[in-house]
Image 1 (cartoon, rainbow, N blue to C red):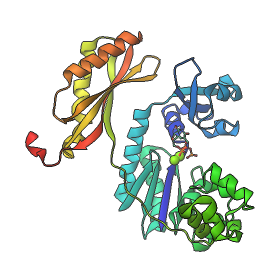
Image 2: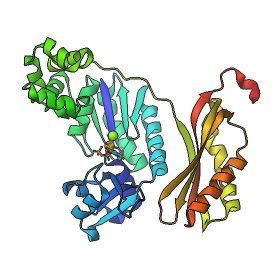
Image 3: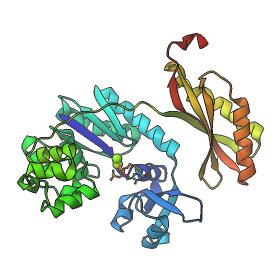
Length: 348
Ligand code: TTP
Ligand code: MG
Ligand code: MG
C-alpha cells in the first residue's frame, strides 16, 4: 500500500502556529517582488482566506481586495522556517517507515505493507511533535493515495481499498487527476471525456495519436483502472543553509561576518559528511521589515567544504549594505550547486 502525506495550508499554518491569536483571521503568505508595496503573488493562504476565494498564485493586490483589512494579515515568506519544519517532519516520517520519498517541501510518498496501521500513528506523531496538521491518503496505488489525501483535506485520513480507489479515480473529473494538466484536460473534454471512466470509450489509437504514446497509453490504462506506482528516486539535497537572529539590529559588517562564522559550521555539516564541494555561496539578509533578500556568488571552480570564503562573504555583505538602507535583523548563509569530490579525499 502507498501513503501520500501532505501538510495542510503549510506555510500559513506555520505562521498561524507562531501567532495563535490570529487563528480565525485570514493569514496569507506572500512572495513580495518588491516593485511596489503590493507587487507579488500569494504563496498560500489559510482556510478562512480560501473561503473568500484567495489562492496560491493570485496577485497580492487582488487578494487584498477580497480580504477585510481588519481580519487579515499578509506576511512575507520565511522559507528558512518552513524548510526547518519540513526537515523536522521528514525525520518523524522516516523514523516510522522505510521506503520514503519526499516529493516537495510539504509532501511525502511512502510505500509500506503496514500502511493502514501506520497512517493514523504518523498523523498523530506529526501533530504532537510539530503542532501541525496534515492529510494522509492510503491506497493500493500512489495516485489513489494522492487523490485520497486531497479529498480528505484538511486534517483528514482516508483509507481506500482497491474498489473505493477505482471508484474515486474513475469518477473524477479529468482535470482533477494529478498528471493531467490543463491542456490535456481540455483536449480530453473535446473528445467527449469529462470523467476518467469516459476515456475508456475513446479508441486507444486515437488517444496515442492525440497525446503521444506515453501519455496516450497512460490515459487508456487509467480509464481501465490500471494504476502503476513507483516511488521514484529521492532527489538529493540541492542546498544547505543556516540562518540566525542577531542580538540587535545592525548594519555593522564586522558583526554580520562574526554571526556568519557561527552559522557556517552548522550549515556545512552535511557537505562535510558527504564530502561535497560547492560552487555557489549565498548570504541571506532579513531586514527589519521582515523581508528576505539574498546575495550570491558562483565560483568558476568548485570549492571544497573547508575552504575559506571570508573575502567573498565580506564582499557580498558590503554589496548588500550599499544597495539597501535598512537595518538587518537576521542573517544566514547558504551553500549550493554541489559537486562530488570523488576520490579527492586527500584534500581533507
Ligand atoms: P501545497 O501543498 O500545494 O498547498 P498548501 O499546503 O498551502 O495547502 P493544502 O492544504 O491544500 O495542501 O503547497 C505547499 C506549500 O508550497 C504552500 O504552503 C506554499 C507553497 N506554494 C507556493 O509557494 N506557491 C504555489 O503556487 C503553491 C501551490 C504552493
Ligand atoms: Mg499542502
Ligand atoms: Mg503539497
